[in-house]
Length: 430
Image (cartoon, rainbow, N blue to C red; front, side, top):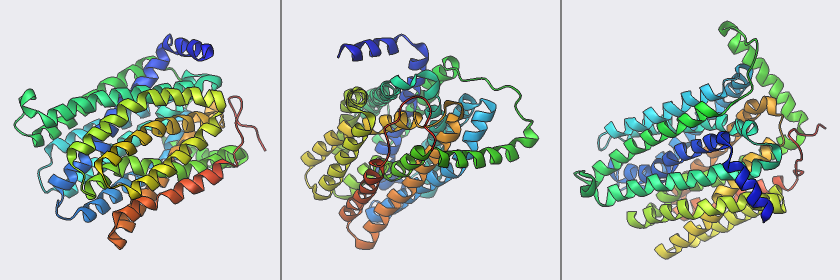
């Protein structure tokens, strides 16, 4: 316990760690308020047809998958470019502010214009997901290998706290619009998108100012950029096969993170489809944010205590229980219990996956390898929402859709058990 206290105190003295972690605070507001919260509710009841919940679930799932496909295709190319030019921070800023602007565009979409709403939403998710390629890659530059579990979990914990505070403000705006001189709950939801964009833009700045990356000398001219990046991608693919443990972990991650992200993006839609009130859904989301804050920190400690791999296995098993529980869930009280279970595992599983992988790949090519990491993660999310939405539409039973996600966790668990626990900053060859 003393060791944990010393490590935590050391983190709090490092400005670069705080600056890096604050980007999680920045983009978590978007995930919480928009992706997991108000967009699914607003899409079902305002932009789409509220009388056809299965159809709107299908289109929302399809849109989440489309955003993931777009990011997946460009992720390795952008990763190679970021490493070759030392441009991780610049590309992070480009994608982050794309997300900020597209999210702000939702304010101007009128009732019934569901296609335009989905267009802005998809581009905002592309901005969010694209920026995370470079955010994850910068972990290797702000924390030594032995402290990456703790720093990664610290970022997620701050993200839950910051995202929760913004969501709390937005919920108050929605429930009591008169307090904020707003004319209706509809206007409150639209202004919540404004709050998220301002928050996201502001908390991106510390990372751009105070996180350093290794400078690159002798970058190639713009005319050679594309061909050189393609060559880098080819070499990265060869290297990732040489780094056998990293490749095996990526396959495991591909499946289990699909389940995690699908539940994050579709949980509110699922609750809405089986008849839970907006009040219940919003309250449960607030629970997740604030309860997940200490649990993310606990998971960082747990990874150092019992080993990162064992902590990951625990998280995957926890999500399998969540999926089964979700299938049998009927009451709003059970939905709150489900939110508690998600709070215990969500942040820790994401944080330790990132730090575990960072120790399997070479630091000098971190953005390239994290390009593949994010590519597989986003390609996995192509499967999850479509699987859930398609099973729900074909069977007419959304509960079977949520139950189908358990197979992704099971496959991911089996593959993860084959991966050796890494040591040091780079992966052993062979």
